[in-house]
Amino acid sequence: MKKIIILWALLFSSLSLAKSTLTYSAPVDVLHFLDQLAKWHPQMTGTYREAFKAKFGQLTQDDLRFLDRYSNLRQKSLSQISNTETFLIASERQPWGTFDQAFIKARTLNDVFPLLKGSYTEQEIEFFKSIIKRFQKQLSHFMGESAQFRKNLKDHEKRLVKKKWANYRKRLTKLLGHQPKIVKGQKVFFVWWPKDKAPSLKLWGHHLLVGINPLHDIQEDQLHRLLGLGLAKAWLAALAPNDKLQLTKVFLEGCKTKTAQLNALRLNNGLRESFLWAFGPLLWQQVRHRKKDLIKDLIPTTAHPMTSLLAPLWAYKINNYLQQKKNIGPALMQIMAVDCHHMIRFLDSRR
Image 1 (cartoon, one colour):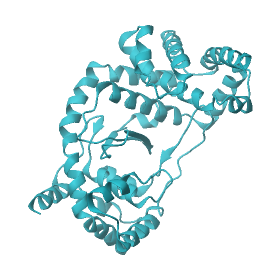
Image 2 (tube, rainbow, N blue to C red; image 1 turned 30 degrees about the horizontal axis):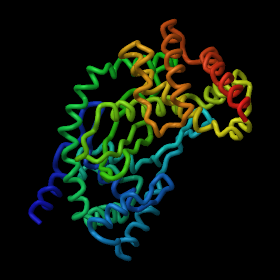
Image 3 (cartoon, rainbow, N blue to C red; image 1 turned 180 degrees about the vertical axis):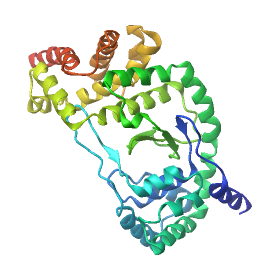
Image 4 (cartoon, helix red, strand yellow; image 1 turned 90 degrees about the vertical axis):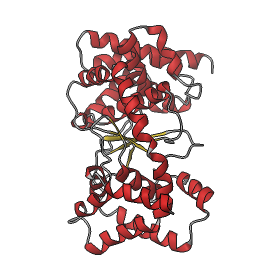
């Protein structure tokens, strides 16, 4: 009990928002826990409920009533972020609104509630306080593990400097032809995640939300993949809607195919995955090493078979394209589409 009280006090008093790219914030961790437990949006799975049940038993009927009310209130202030997407550039995001922004701005849980005024009534704010208090014991347990993030992330932040993370961000910014709004102040928030589950990565507003178990040793290559994929996904999603549609149109024309044919060949997922890998971890490794033969090692065996073929080739071509000081546009899509066309011809010949 004494340990729980100490951990609970830390959630309300410690300065938890770090001034760095990789960030651990206790308020954000608490918000993510409640969101996942409530399952109020399709993006939220039953992962946390499984972990909760394993440690503390089934949620009671009263627990579920609290979570139902929480779910209804969470949907009250959602913001509309452009989710224009094509089969090539996805914009799937975690829900985002003034409630989320309050937890990001807050340095402690006590800072959250004044920030909710204007968007929620006093009665609703009191309810938010009560649901946090209701799950005090469980939050203290899981957030107690999250304390390990503080040490781990400092070490990883130092390694990012050596891995030329800043250079890669500049290279990707240059490629997009402008500095997206998300570049300024973008954070990578780490939150508690069950140890028996694969790490998760989601867009959250213009930030990245990485779910990983804090007691699990984050391997450098694993972190490299997560951050590279996340940054590419976030920054491509931030392109103007018309740009996304135009780039995809040029790609399909150069590939000399239609989405129906891609569906028939089951290539949609492979192309989208290859696109993210090429602009993400593989381009980052090109920036670091400038050697084409190093980049395949990063792609996991669970990836789409096409990814290990197309993504390294695309990353190499993207990097060469950047050497000519060019921005993303139809010319780059045409270069990438040639490889897509050759692959589809090959696959068609084997049907």
